[in-house]
Length: 189
Image (cartoon, rainbow, N blue to C red; front, side, top):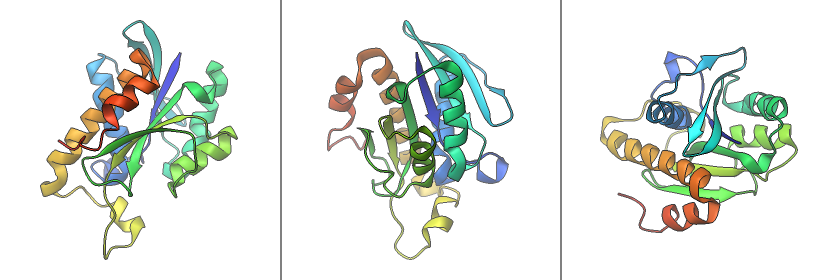
């Protein structure tokens, strides 16, 4: 069984912000699989199948900086190891429209990933990173919580859709296959 977690912040205020691309990816994936989330105290969750593989879709409702609390709770409850966890999240160091799949390593400064690493006491999970770019003259905290501007919306939406395809490929065909397909340099549409 796999867990696919999408990171973001709960509430309408954060709905179309750069920091919530992980939540948006999970919403698209749930729709694709004809699933509906049920909310519990610290997360929204739904179980389904990708091809013949059971999956849990998870949106932590603990706010980005505490994402690890909800993720660790579900992994423990379902007896799933970090190696079967895929986390979809925003990445400042990738250009808008670019995605990248990576397993293990540091948080790269992402506070949601840092929280997951700390709560799991492991960094050995898969990340599907969605590029949002790094601002020139705006504080990072403000930039990630801003609404995605209209001129970037199409490219970000396309990268979110490709991140969903990447997660599905990891589950159905394996990490190496997904990395071969989605980590190409020319993967910006």
